[in-house]
Length: 373
Image 1 (tube, rainbow, N blue to C red):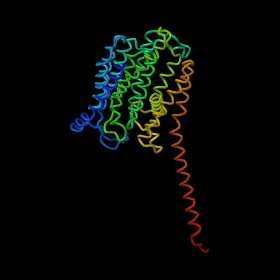
Image 2 (image 1 turned 180 degrees about the vertical axis):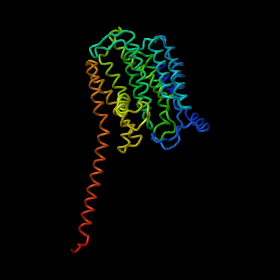
Image 3 (image 1 turned 60 degrees about the vertical axis):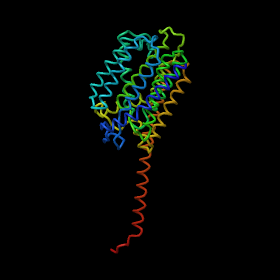
């Protein structure tokens, strides 16, 4: 346990001490995320926070971690480096979405084919249990890419991605620790520590952004946490610890970015626009349209994420499909609330304007001199 605590503290300290130097270098080299029409921030902000997160996380787990129990750990490290380099290059010179997708496919394929981190059992969801190897690899690759990109897409306002991913990392750490998996606990807490150090400089008003280097590597690790947690509780794993609703709990942990990504991609498909074309249709955009600040929107979505986790944990003795159904239904309802409140507020404003206009017209008519015919 002492080793885990040291790993977490080390990751935090490396991250928090590295970022001021990164900000200085970014300013000297003019490496900024410049304001655009589709972006919320109005000033130039460095976007190399992912460099500190990656270095702090890697240094900590290499110094304190013992990966002898994780099959193919070296392939996970190789895939993580690939994604980090891809994200860092995009932060500096900009990569096309397709090139980033190719890298993600390669990284996901490397992990799912050369390690045991893949979904082998549906655990009764849709009436399916064990699935063939090829289907297992394909499904796991899809999950990795979707989760990784959902974290990338939720990184739209100050502090949001950092706050949500800390909650997710800490939750996975708790779950792994309760199962006695100390190696995965250390990795999860080291990730949380590195993100926390970054968050000190990212919470509104942000001095630095996570960038793709951060969101892709963090999202990739969270996808591995989710897959491993689900599989470690599969009846096929042979482990003593088995939670029936593990897929539902994993969904609840990641529900905010996953729901937001699904919703945005559906809207883009309906509008016949590229799924990779940025817009202002994310949940955090709607909260800001309702008058919330960056900090308030971040706190609201963080609380929502925690509530979903608590609901899933309360339902953990139920079947996985039932917990997933509850979480999915609640996400659909809660996700529409910011849009409903915004449209209701706009309707009230328009109604007030109409009433005011009628009053003015009435007053003008009352005091207007009568014309004799």
